[in-house]
Length: 153
Image (tube, rainbow, N blue to C red; front, side, top):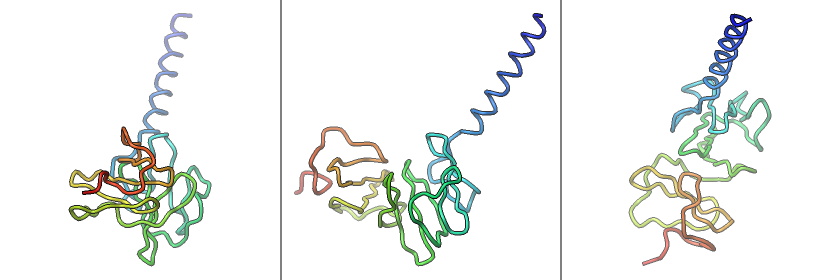
Protein backbone atom coordinates (compact mmCIF):
# COMPACT_ATOMS: atom_id res chain seq x y z
CA UNK A 1 0.00 0.00 0.00
CA UNK A 2 2.86 2.41 0.79
CA UNK A 3 4.31 1.81 -2.70
CA UNK A 4 0.99 2.57 -4.36
CA UNK A 5 0.59 5.75 -2.30
CA UNK A 6 4.13 6.94 -3.11
CA UNK A 7 3.67 6.08 -6.78
CA UNK A 8 0.34 7.95 -6.86
CA UNK A 9 1.96 11.00 -5.29
CA UNK A 10 4.77 10.94 -7.87
CA UNK A 11 2.28 10.73 -10.75
CA UNK A 12 0.15 13.49 -9.22
CA UNK A 13 3.20 15.72 -8.65
CA UNK A 14 4.43 15.11 -12.18
CA UNK A 15 0.99 15.96 -13.58
CA UNK A 16 0.81 19.21 -11.59
CA UNK A 17 4.30 20.07 -12.79
CA UNK A 18 3.26 19.67 -16.42
CA UNK A 19 0.17 21.79 -15.91
CA UNK A 20 2.19 24.58 -14.31
CA UNK A 21 4.77 24.41 -17.07
CA UNK A 22 2.12 24.67 -19.80
CA UNK A 23 0.62 27.82 -18.23
CA UNK A 24 3.90 29.75 -17.83
CA UNK A 25 3.33 33.32 -19.09
CA UNK A 26 5.17 34.43 -22.21
CA UNK A 27 8.09 36.84 -21.89
CA UNK A 28 7.61 40.61 -22.19
CA UNK A 29 7.54 41.58 -25.85
CA UNK A 30 6.26 38.16 -26.93
CA UNK A 31 4.57 38.30 -30.27
CA UNK A 32 2.84 36.19 -32.81
CA UNK A 33 4.43 35.41 -35.48
CA UNK A 34 7.71 34.81 -33.76
CA UNK A 35 5.93 32.11 -31.75
CA UNK A 36 2.60 30.33 -32.39
CA UNK A 37 0.80 31.62 -29.28
CA UNK A 38 1.13 33.93 -26.28
CA UNK A 39 0.23 32.86 -22.76
CA UNK A 40 -0.86 35.80 -20.60
CA UNK A 41 -0.39 36.20 -16.85
CA UNK A 42 -3.76 34.49 -16.20
CA UNK A 43 -2.63 31.43 -18.19
CA UNK A 44 -4.91 32.17 -21.14
CA UNK A 45 -3.64 31.34 -24.63
CA UNK A 46 -3.83 34.03 -27.35
CA UNK A 47 -3.51 33.11 -31.03
CA UNK A 48 -4.14 34.61 -34.47
CA UNK A 49 -6.28 32.42 -36.72
CA UNK A 50 -6.80 33.63 -40.31
CA UNK A 51 -6.09 37.22 -39.26
CA UNK A 52 -8.50 37.12 -36.28
CA UNK A 53 -7.37 37.20 -32.61
CA UNK A 54 -8.60 34.41 -30.34
CA UNK A 55 -8.15 33.79 -26.61
CA UNK A 56 -8.60 30.16 -25.59
CA UNK A 57 -10.21 29.51 -28.99
CA UNK A 58 -12.83 32.30 -28.77
CA UNK A 59 -12.72 35.60 -30.68
CA UNK A 60 -11.46 38.60 -28.73
CA UNK A 61 -13.56 41.59 -29.74
CA UNK A 62 -13.54 42.52 -33.42
CA UNK A 63 -10.28 42.05 -35.30
CA UNK A 64 -9.42 41.44 -38.95
CA UNK A 65 -6.31 41.19 -41.11
CA UNK A 66 -4.04 40.99 -38.06
CA UNK A 67 -0.40 40.44 -39.00
CA UNK A 68 1.14 40.98 -35.55
CA UNK A 69 -0.13 40.30 -32.03
CA UNK A 70 2.16 41.68 -29.34
CA UNK A 71 2.03 41.43 -25.55
CA UNK A 72 4.02 44.34 -24.20
CA UNK A 73 4.17 45.13 -20.47
CA UNK A 74 1.10 42.93 -19.91
CA UNK A 75 -0.99 44.80 -22.50
CA UNK A 76 -2.02 43.23 -25.81
CA UNK A 77 -1.53 45.12 -29.06
CA UNK A 78 -2.34 44.18 -32.62
CA UNK A 79 -1.15 45.53 -35.95
CA UNK A 80 -3.19 44.92 -39.08
CA UNK A 81 -2.19 44.73 -42.73
CA UNK A 82 -3.01 48.46 -43.13
CA UNK A 83 -0.34 49.19 -40.46
CA UNK A 84 -3.02 50.27 -37.96
CA UNK A 85 -2.28 49.61 -34.26
CA UNK A 86 -4.87 48.67 -31.65
CA UNK A 87 -4.65 47.92 -27.91
CA UNK A 88 -6.93 45.59 -25.96
CA UNK A 89 -8.80 47.53 -23.25
CA UNK A 90 -10.34 44.42 -21.73
CA UNK A 91 -13.58 44.90 -23.65
CA UNK A 92 -12.68 46.34 -27.09
CA UNK A 93 -9.71 47.04 -29.36
CA UNK A 94 -8.89 50.75 -29.24
CA UNK A 95 -6.74 52.63 -31.78
CA UNK A 96 -3.19 53.41 -30.66
CA UNK A 97 0.40 53.47 -31.91
CA UNK A 98 3.29 51.00 -31.75
CA UNK A 99 4.14 50.75 -28.02
CA UNK A 100 7.76 49.86 -28.67
CA UNK A 101 8.61 53.37 -29.87
CA UNK A 102 9.87 55.68 -27.10
CA UNK A 103 7.81 58.86 -26.88
CA UNK A 104 9.53 62.19 -27.45
CA UNK A 105 10.61 64.16 -24.39
CA UNK A 106 7.76 66.25 -22.88
CA UNK A 107 5.10 64.16 -24.64
CA UNK A 108 1.68 64.39 -22.99
CA UNK A 109 -1.25 62.08 -23.52
CA UNK A 110 -4.95 62.78 -23.15
CA UNK A 111 -7.72 60.53 -21.93
CA UNK A 112 -8.64 57.80 -24.39
CA UNK A 113 -6.58 55.72 -26.73
CA UNK A 114 -3.11 57.28 -26.70
CA UNK A 115 -0.04 55.75 -25.07
CA UNK A 116 3.26 57.13 -23.85
CA UNK A 117 6.41 55.00 -23.72
CA UNK A 118 9.01 56.33 -21.30
CA UNK A 119 12.80 55.93 -21.56
CA UNK A 120 12.65 52.75 -19.44
CA UNK A 121 10.12 51.30 -21.94
CA UNK A 122 7.18 51.49 -19.52
CA UNK A 123 3.87 51.92 -21.35
CA UNK A 124 1.61 54.61 -19.85
CA UNK A 125 -2.08 54.82 -20.68
CA UNK A 126 -4.89 57.08 -19.56
CA UNK A 127 -8.14 55.15 -19.97
CA UNK A 128 -11.59 56.72 -19.73
CA UNK A 129 -11.74 55.92 -15.99
CA UNK A 130 -9.29 58.80 -15.37
CA UNK A 131 -6.61 56.71 -13.64
CA UNK A 132 -3.16 56.78 -15.26
CA UNK A 133 -1.66 53.29 -15.57
CA UNK A 134 1.90 52.12 -16.05
CA UNK A 135 2.28 48.73 -17.77
CA UNK A 136 -1.40 48.00 -17.22
CA UNK A 137 -1.35 48.76 -13.46
CA UNK A 138 -2.87 51.92 -11.95
CA UNK A 139 -0.14 54.34 -10.87
CA UNK A 140 -0.46 55.33 -7.20
CA UNK A 141 -1.89 58.66 -6.14
CA UNK A 142 -3.82 59.73 -9.23
CA UNK A 143 -7.52 60.15 -9.98
CA UNK A 144 -9.73 62.16 -12.35
CA UNK A 145 -6.73 62.75 -14.63
CA UNK A 146 -7.39 64.24 -18.07
CA UNK A 147 -3.76 64.75 -19.24
CA UNK A 148 -0.67 62.70 -18.30
CA UNK A 149 2.02 63.24 -17.04
CA UNK A 150 0.65 65.51 -14.38
CA UNK A 151 1.21 68.29 -13.39
CA UNK A 152 1.64 70.21 -16.60
CA UNK A 153 4.58 72.62 -16.71
